Structure formats: structure tokens, C-alpha cells
Image 1 (tube, helix red, strand yellow):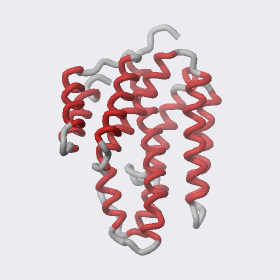
Image 2 (tube, rainbow, N blue to C red; image 1 turned 60 degrees about the horizontal axis):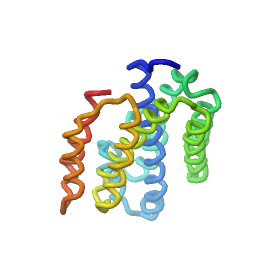
Image 3 (cartoon, rainbow, N blue to C red; image 1 turned 120 degrees about the horizontal axis):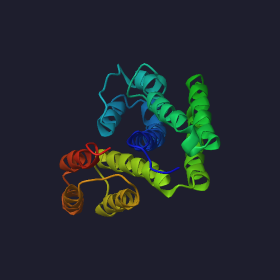
Length: 225
């Protein structure tokens, strides 16, 4: 497709980030669901803290309803899926209609889950379609730089959420660092190598300073994309 414009890089980057955010937060939501259903009223506040979102929910029941499905909540899962889909729609000619179709299917399943009193099965279908979306990127997008930009956004988001969890082992953190670096180095995205090296030192230290690591991760790329 020739030279990839800055605008397309930005759209691919955020498509990757938002899609990964949806995938990871649904997984966390599914794992947390039983705790809150079983009466742990304060567990949802801990989930908000680990995801780095404001706790604007009245109680666990409100969280279980609004966090996944409220399109008026900018931090909700469905809002992030909408953002992923918006970027993917603009990129239809870049990623292909079949790839885009899997995000449409994911949105269909999200809306179906919102109407279901037991939404976990439909949310699992959302996860399945997101995995199919990434598989389609690998199989159908022949431009390696395009794949790597989208994957770099994905890896950046997964690294961010892993740091916010605050309990990953040094091995897990280093693996996330290596995956992100590998994708960035094979893409046209520029980043600050010194900051990246410092981030590496922080995640290998004991104890890990997660706050500093998150700040450096933000400085690493946000000014360059």
C-alpha cells in the first residue's frame, strides 16, 4: 500500500489498543463476576482500581450492569469496543472486510449479552471473535508493517494492564517488555530507547515500582504516535 501515513499509524495503533483492552477486561470481568454475585460487595472497587478507572458505581450490582454494557460510560467495555470498531471501520481497506466483520460479530455478542440475565456465555463469544479478528489480521493482511503497528498497540495495552494488576512476576513483565519491543522494532513507530531501557530496569528490580513503570510506559510512546 506504499508509505503508511501518520493518520493510518494512529488508527492502527488505537485499534490494537482498544481491541486488547476489551479482550483483557472481559476476561477480568468474567473472573470477578462470581465474587460479586456471591456477595463480595467491595470486590468491584478493587477491580476499578486495578483497571485504572474511576469508581463511579453505586454498588456491585450497578458495576455488573454498567461497566460491561453502558454506552454512556466512557470507561465501559462496550465503549472501548465501539472505539475499536470505529478505527477498524476507517481501516476497512487496510485490514479487509473479513477482519472487520469479526469486530461486528463481537459487538453483536456484546449487545446480546446486555439483554441476557446470565451474560457470561455471550461474553465468551466476544472473546472468541476478538481472537478470530487477530487471526484474520495475521492471515489476510499481507503488509508486515501494518500487522506490526496493530500488534504493537495490542502489546502496549496488555503491558499497561499487566502493570496495573500489580502482581506479575519479573518473568511475566520481561516477557511483556520483549513482546512490545519486538513489534515496535518491526514497525515504523519511533520510541525513546533510553526510556525503554529504564523501564526494563524497573520491571526487573525487586520490588517492582509499578507506578514509575506505568509513567515511563506512557512517556515512551504517547508523544510519538
